[in-house]
Length: 183
Image (cartoon, rainbow, N blue to C red; front, side, top):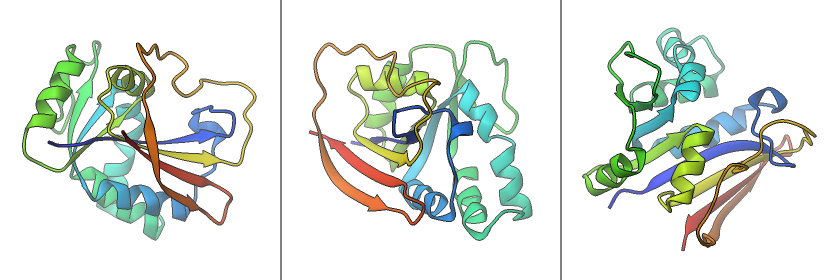
């Protein structure tokens, strides 16, 4: 059975607003490595619009840093599904799903292939509440935002989800990666 993974960046106080976070080559290298084992991405509209056309353009022109270029090449070739009620179509072929996210993810997990990566906070919360996230990678940035959207703030669980810490990494810029798998 395929695994669903989720990688994300947050501040110490759990804010996931990307404008409050610092990037680095190490973070891009980490996410590039994480995405090497992925052949399907499911993303929300907002996340998709943040990622495209930026990363495909970097992949095409190789206009970023070495780590950005590598990450762009990796993520630009992964099959993508966009979850959106408002998008009519997406250029370049990604499939749009308008509803039934949990059922779609359950079906995809049963198909042959590598891991499935998810992106977008609403998606993450919904799939976490449904117990469908198998691996969670949280990059904690050494910043206290004080305000902004919080990680899993809108999640409502029927029961606690137990996870085991399986990996940690500390980057030169003070970011810490915490890798968890569902028990």
